[in-house]
Amino acid sequence: AQSVTQLDSHVSVSEGTPVLLRCNYSSSYSPSLFWYVQHPNKGLQLLLKYTSAATLVKGINGFEAEFKKSETSFHLTKPSAHMSDAAEYFCVVSPYNQGGKLIFGQGTELSVKP
Amino acid sequence: NAGVTQTPKFQVLKTGQSMTLQCAQDMNHNSMYWYRQDPGMGLRLIYYSASEGTTDKGEVPNGYNVSRLNKREFSLRLESAAPSQTSVYFCASIARGQGYETQYFGPGTRLLVL
Image 1: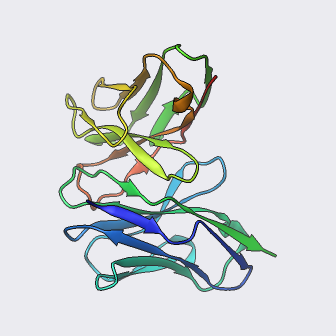
Image 2: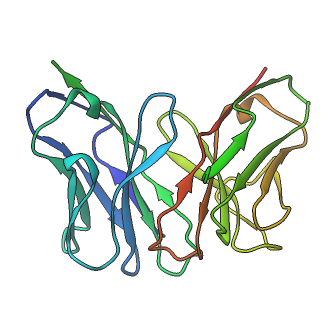
């Protein structure tokens, strides 16, 4: 069965320092992987996605993620946090040939301190 | 181009009441989905419709019914609301139902069942 585990429920960083949000997945075949962001009381916005092309994926707002098949990981990083990055982040897997269904991780809340 | 729209934005129900959540997309997408979001659990798939005229159960379908009224609209019905259905509900759509595609989410409906 496919699943997604976000290793931290909450991450706190200072403004200007790097961000690392960790995600491990389990999937029988090569999945598509996504990171979505949700600001308070808002809908979900796509940050980036991996679809079996380049393993290093660049997204919006300076975020990027690296697909590592050997480690079954898809960690999200940003070199320098901004106050506006404070939000909840979801790692998501779309299993192969499953009609586009998404399986969400539990979410990581990112806090950014001044 | 409004994307995915949901109505209502917020609703309070008493236990046992019924209601229908409406979702519409104007992107000519084939596949549509209903998710619920609960604290600490990410989003979970309730029902989905791979194409007009078809619907299938997701991870948590109990207590819900759906109707794919036409290509644009996909409604979610609670026949007899229960407090456990207090949640935020998101509708999403995807162009062809392939896993590598981006899902577009609506703004959500907050439902409180007393």
